[in-house]
Image 1 (cartoon, one colour):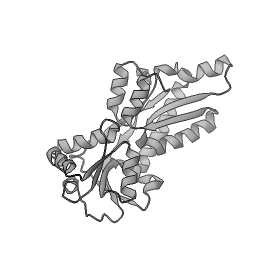
Image 2: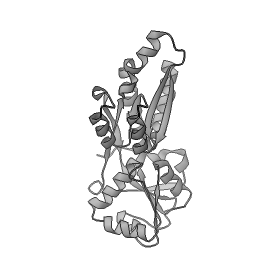
Image 3: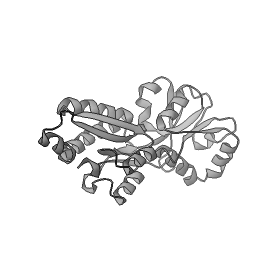
Image 4: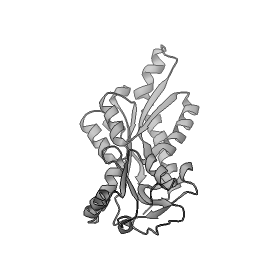
Amino acid sequence: MKIASKSLIIVALAIICVLVAVTAPYFLGHLWISGTSKQKSILVLSGAGLMNPVNELIDMYEEREGVNVEVDYGGSGEEFSKLSMGIGDVFIPGAYYYMEIAIENGYVIPETVMNITLHIPVIAVPKGNPKNIGGLEDLLKPGVRLAIANPKAAAIGKVARKIFEKNGLDDELMEKYERGEMVEAPTANQLLLYVATGQVDAAIIWEDMVTWAQSKEKVEIIEIPREMNIIKTIPAAVTVYAK
């Protein structure tokens, strides 16, 4: 059953708060017990598509705990690369794939991993849907300018390509790219900007992004039928560097 976007954000905030509260001793103890540092700080590595709920969480947590929380937003691949270099206290990628690799490589504490919400891909179009796009096949029509995130940089890019492959449309997608009618974006945020400013006719983004200020009254969504879609589970975990 699909959950409304606002509900997803509320659920994400609530469960992330629990995660941070429960696992706080992992990365706060050495700052508070030692008494040698006045600057208590947590660094979160987060997928760019989760910016709004994570920003709300930060405001809530900083006010409650008096701890400075810094966030590095970017494509999930980019954030994973930073994690692999020993950076970050909390890791929140845009797809479980990156968390699995983080666990395999010993970058996060396995017992702190929690599934916090679902990420549902949708088709975003400019207000009014000028190209009358109704589904995936319409995205591949000649003359329709399509934006998809770089699969090596952002989780939504990898998922978008898998959706086309799942529905037997990957060859048509490649033809569109060769015609110069498809552009790649480094982050989910850039996809939203392309649609909101009319630079493209459509993009595949995460559903909850339509609640962002950048998209209000500028972007509409077309749902992808569940049997055609690939819905992702979003995890969060404390990193081993936070010890």
